Length: 191
Image (cartoon, rainbow, N blue to C red; front, side, top):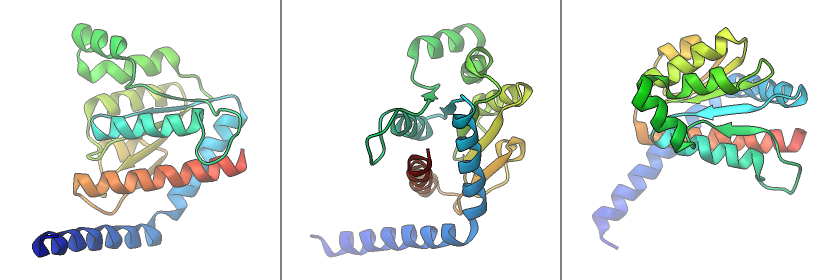
């Protein structure tokens, strides 16, 4: 292996390790509150509504699949949906009403008061994510946001905002999936 590549790889891992160490000290209470919202929703007949753009869309699909399928053990499916997976709805709403409405319209159509919104955005300022959260709040849903470290419109609108300690998109996404997996693990153990 090229020595400079080895050094870069180690530096990258050091940065990841530093971010993980920072998460250990700051995010426990927000994660615990999120887990409680999810458990209460599922126990009352609700579902978890995930959504995001780009890499956050992939994380939304991934986490929804962990709930509906399985995470580590065989169990009954848990109710979850990822709003960024229905291309017909996404393209119709984007074409007819604008991309900023693609998640909002689905929340208006599909969400009920027992549900929890799980909005994922590295910036916390994606208009289509924020609009869907506003629609969810109007329906009385609990809102969980997974964002970067900066205060944002999304973090301010949410009942709980898990703000990971970075402003670099790649590092934010890495921490988001770690947190998402941990939430899946605890929910799976306790439902």
